[in-house]
Length: 346
Ligand SMILES: Nc1ncnc2c1ncn2[C@@H]1O[C@H](COP(=O)(O)OP(=O)(O)OP(=O)(O)O)[C@@H](O)[C@H]1O
Image (cartoon, rainbow, N blue to C red; front, side):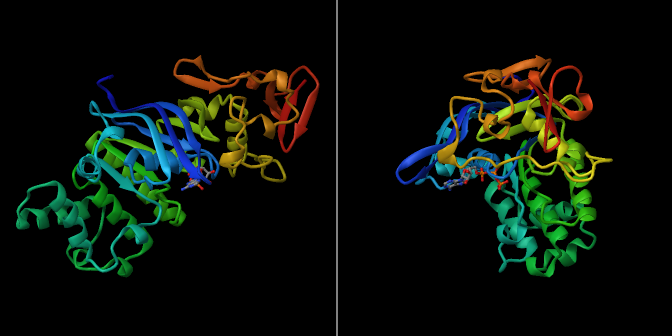
C-alpha cells in the first residue's frame, strides 16, 4: 500500500437485494483515497454514490445488501471487521458528515453531551478534559458562543449551526478519513460556502482524506483535488479537478459539466442530459452503460466491454466513444449532429 494513501478500495461491489436477487449499485470499483486530499464523487441521482459511502462506513442494511471486495484502511480490510471492531473505527478514525444533521443528531440530548458521547466511546479523557475538548471543538467549527451552544438542543440551532455540530462530532477524534455525503445540500448558498471553507481548513489541519459526495459541480470546483464521475455503478472518468473541468472526455462528464449553471453563457436554455440513470435491474451490464443516452453515436463507436483507460497522466476514462464526440463549439470536420446541446460526428 502506498504510504500516502488512506484507503484503498479494491474490486468493490455493493449489491442490493430486490425480489431475492442481488443487483450491484456499485460494480467492481477500484479507487485510492490519499492523505490530505478531497476526492469528490459526482453523478446524477441513482449513480451509486451513497451506496459507495454506506459501504465505506459499513452502515448498510446487512440483510439486504451484499458487499464484496476489499476496503484497505491502515492495512486492515474494513470489509472483514466485526460490527464491534467497525464501531471502534467509525466515529474515531473515520468521520462522517451527512446531508441532514437533524436526523443524525439526537433531539433529546444537548449538543455538548452528544459530542462528549463520541469522546466517551473512543477516548479515555476525564470529565473535565472532555468538556474542555468539546468547547475547543465548538470553537474549531466557528461556533460563536460555545458555552451556550453546549447546553442547547439541536432544534434550537439553525441548519448551518447543526451542520457545524456534525462536523465537530466527525473531527472530534481527529479521523484520517472523512466521508461527507452531500454535506451542504440542505443549506443556503452563503452558509454552504462557509461550511465548505471550514471543512477544507480542518482537513488541511488534520491531514485527513475527504471523500466528498455531491451532485453539485460548483461544490466540486471549490473543494476537490480529484474528481470521480460515476455512472450506473461504475467510474466513467477520474482526473485531477483542473484536468476534469478543462479537458473532460467521457460524454457523461461533458454533459454534466454542460448542465452546470453558468456553463451555457450565451445560450438560451440550460443543457439537459437526455434520459435518466437506469434502475438497478435495467443497467446494461457488459456494454457501455451510457451508450443508450447518446443514441446518435453508433454502437460501433463504443467499446464492447469498456475498461478505464489512462488517456493522460492520472486521467482515466471508460469507453472510447469520446473520440467521436464533441460539443458544438469544438466542431471541426465531419457531419455534425446536435442534440440537446451535445454534438457528435458520424
Ligand atoms: N436499499 C436499497 N435497495 C434497493 N435498491 C437500492 C437501495 N439503495 C439504493 N438502491 C438503488 O441503488 C442505486 C444507487 O443508489 P444510490 O442511493 O447509491 O445513488 P446516489 O447516486 O447516491 O443517488 P442520490 O444522489 O439520489 O443519493 C439506485 O438505483 C437506487 O435505486
